[in-house]
Image (cartoon, rainbow, N blue to C red):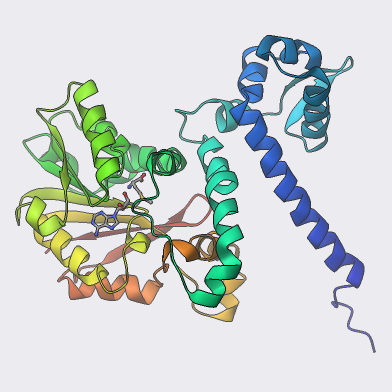
Length: 347
Ligand SMILES: C[S@@+](CC[C@H](N)C(=O)[O-])C[C@H]1O[C@@H](n2cnc3c(N)ncnc32)[C@H](O)[C@@H]1O
């Protein structure tokens, strides 16, 4: 008897077409972000395609097709005319680069970086070659900084203030350390969120550190905020900070180097200080590989294969913390599309 749950060939074909539409939609969004179409629609809702084209100096027939397609994919809504406006919430998601929900940077990471890496894949699969994170250049670093913005806001505004005892320390001469500070956006957010605290960032990527230092200087925050060249042990004294934060950094570090970085980060903490890791957790069982919360890390593992990145499993994360002497309870939660937040306290 036929299996009632068996998937049909037509359904499998439909899945491929769905993903292919996703591929086109991501490029449609990318065009809209880069050419300012979403921004124009956010500023003047209820506008005809030709008026947007005239305003932005674009070829009107192409903008008309863009609008129709975006309407078809429910990125835009429309009245008879048609006069277009953004569908709900896309004003912040696609037209407000400083908003925590903004995803223009993540889309760009796909169309710019991932698309290029996927082209190199065939050769890399034969040779095992990598093109590491460090040294990919300024535009790449900027795209990374844009794509992690939401996580940074959540860390500064929600995760850190909720940690027991931390606020009191930061209000009385305490210090925060960000390991893997990249271009320094979080450093400045932390300085703003905790106006009495010292904020130190450490990274090993020179271009990012230069951008971070320029931002710190431009913000007039040099007395309280610093971006230092790693490794952590040589950049920061032992027992000198009240929290260490790592956002999307652990999986960027080669597995052989991870124990050293976590040990040095733990050593930098004062007793009672917190280590906060926001990263991804790789599934380990077949059952986990199909669970929705592991989809994002699974895809990141594929997307960043050529960067040389290996996403840590839950077991590896826990061993790293334990081996660094952080033997207390580990608070583990999932946020957003599948980011893991790990918080643990030094005894
Ligand atoms: C994906 S980026 C994230 C940057 C930043 N935390 C953010 O949220 O935008 C990872 C960063 O970790 C840095 N990194 C990698 N290995 C490191 C190490 N051993 N010590 C310090 N930083 C490191 C990289 O250079 C890069 O800037």
